[in-house]
Image 1 (tube, rainbow, N blue to C red):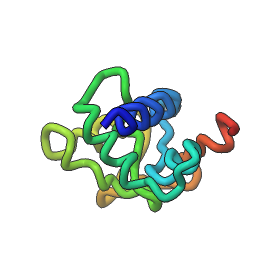
Image 2: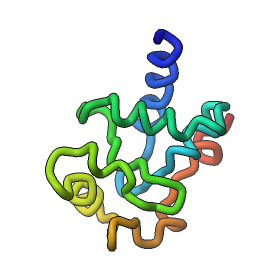
Image 3: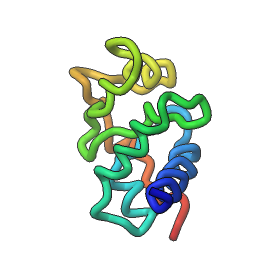
Image 4: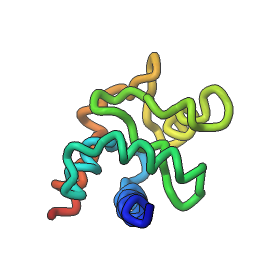
Length: 111
């Protein structure tokens, strides 16, 4: 369990750096952390953060921009509302202009 805790904390450190109004993906975070096949584990970390105010989990979506983690947020559309409050448009549970808003930690933070 300690290994998962450490991995989760590393995920949270990356997520804290995603800028306001931008989004990233589970897979991009996993790749940045050197665990490219662990996108699902990044998702588990997002679920485990339990809505902590210091972790903007709403900025993490799947590889095509779908709000695949939205059911882990309180209320029906909280994830979408949080993104829209930051100027991110969402249509049919998908980030509009995902490629333009995508924040890649590998490029932005380097290795």
